[in-house]
Image (tube, rainbow, N blue to C red; front, side, top):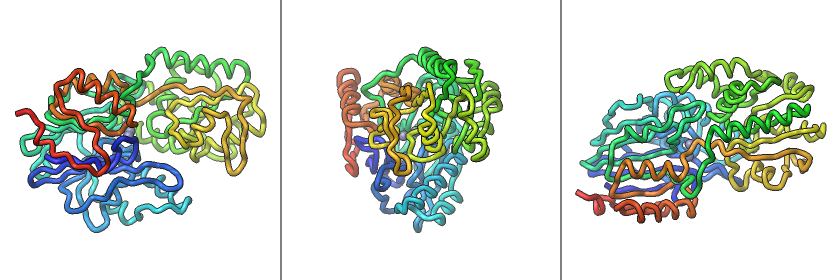
Length: 429
Ligand SMILES: [Zn+2]
Ligand SMILES: [Zn+2]
């Protein structure tokens, strides 16, 4: 079995892992790295694919899929619950790329991709070429999976993004259920870091929100559209925040999708009640009123690179709102406006350089990825003879690599982009 990282090698973004057996070629994820001045794609795939196996809807895993449909039509399998999210995210990506005049795939490729998309339930073995694969819940977002594969007698796991501890929205990843394997490709986003205790973090976060509103101020919560916005709404609802809480942006469309899949949600009733309780901003007129009284706004984009959050920032700055809090609940990638605001308390919106030194700006680590302990846990459970690291910064991959060398009797690789590993040479028989 040969494995090539066509992207997400020593970096986060543009995932794409090519797995080749004797007669079967499979691609795991095909995403895009959103960066300026233009998005980055994985290396192109040459030749026939028996199938594409998607781990979840996030654009860094799905954003390049339509590129595979220029003149070919492989089936793309995806976990149950992810199709509608993929559709929302791909359309949004296309819209923004066009606005910025960036090079991207065409609508016809998107259509062809959608004709060939198939949703698969967790725990249901599916054949493709000479391979069979099974999805296990990854606890990361709605319809996210770790994939177990058997091909030519080799057992392979593609971890995708996963979280092995429970969140408001999701049950933990099925680390205890997934079988042992010979080879694993594992994400290492937080390979050198630890997450705070979730309960403790929620408490601190809600206290910070309440401090601002009790002083008569407003709270802006830039949040990712998929998962984080809905989770934060649920969190504020369950902690009885008693000022109006608004939900704006693409997270509304995503919330509608989440409500369609009760079986994939940890506590559906709480989510349902929370989403009924928040005020869904319908238009400009409603947007203008949120600063009339103490309130909380959950809005996209999570890293401030677009979306209605920019309107709220501009307005809050114009009005010099007293006791304004801007609380980030997601990681801010370097080079994004969110990172700039978090670090320098400044942001450029529509050519205006806005100074937010008057505001309370903080970051809370509500990650949907496991931390280093979660990575170690999955590796111990799977007990592989070959570990391939991807989806992580070099420092993070290094720490995981050292841990594997110290704790598992396994070979560990952090391949460069495009480098092919023939793992058959290293599998213990
Ligand atoms: Zn993800
Ligand atoms: Zn990812």
